[in-house]
Length: 94
Image (cartoon, rainbow, N blue to C red):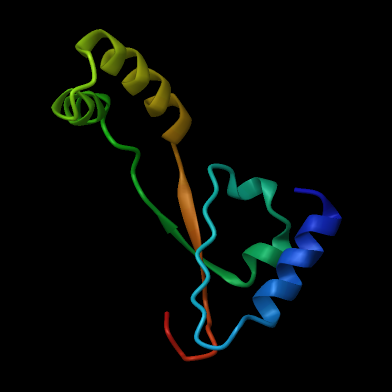
């Protein structure tokens, strides 16, 4: 994230619309500026198991061979993902 983008994001965090809950997702929290992270609560989710992804795709009528490839690629992409959630909101929601 560029510094300009991070500054715009910070302004958005500091002046949200009334009642807004902000959820920021990233696969690389280290790529965010410390000032962005300081305004977030990090909630980590374990990456889904490859077999579970593949089973869901097959259940959705995706060909098993394609489901296997997509599941392998998806597993690689989601490894170690986390979702920073804003610590505060104007309405007090967390």
